[in-house]
Length: 181
Image (cartoon, rainbow, N blue to C red; front, side):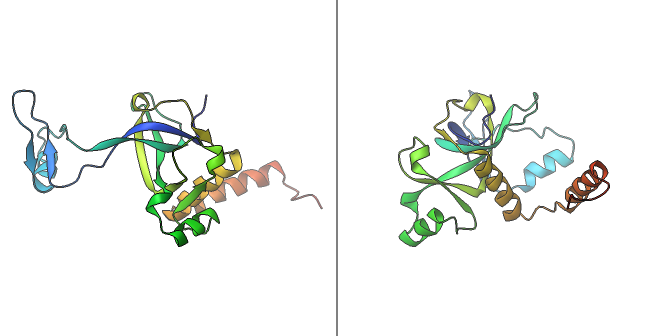
């Protein structure tokens, strides 16, 4: 069953950032690397460029943006949610009216969550399938999911002109005489 458009609970790690904390094994304490340069140098010089980072994470609800995944990665593409208690009254009103550029309102009557939430178009995550409870807390309908995906692409300024050109050419081949009048 597809999880695209579903809100599920997942364990979501934060992105590694400097100073980097590296796991050194069971017998040694983690060590810190204050900036990215030594890590990049290790990769460029052909040394060991895989590190076990220690990063914070939390159990949180996420919106599965797309669930197409390859077997080797086994990850979902998801968006973080933002609780309304973190927003001002004006921001809450803007989100409810779908006037906020980077937040998509999740109608509370459709989602079993502790409080009102919005999907953060800027809060992209990759979440491993083993870190997801596949029981949905609610689900967007097909129109809402398409709207979230379109707003996500627009927010990040993806250039889709070549894809649109291909789609137009395919439509023209299917109907060479043009649209029915």
